[in-house]
Length: 146
Image (cartoon, rainbow, N blue to C red; front, side):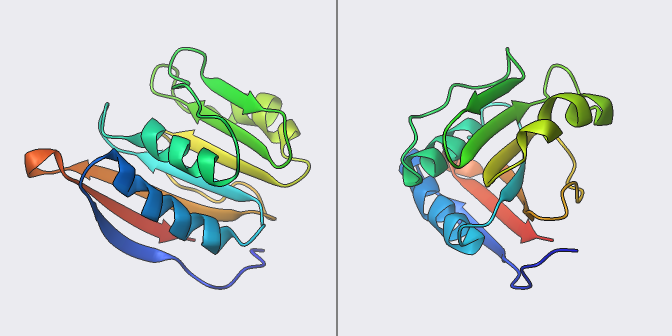
């Protein structure tokens, strides 16, 4: 049961990496101090980690490195910031239940790269972000909450 009924849906044009900040602010405001799970999908190099870095700065965290090589980066602060990149390993329910789910005890922001959106935590807001590369290096960011 999701306890936050306002939906967040939209399309944003991104021209330059700093434009990700307005998208990050919109999602941060939507979260309204609730735990949040964000699914990030799009081609390699399109800006998924850049988006996470802008979101991290909004909540006073240092930028994160791409989790591609280690699969999981965790900021042991409050709220907990967790970035999982499943490009190399592929999504696994078993991995999630054993390694990630135990970290979701208090308020958290969980970023799942390369994972199809699905409801995975009853007490968290869920947002799907799909980033598409367009002409002139612009991006289109499609956002859907569920």
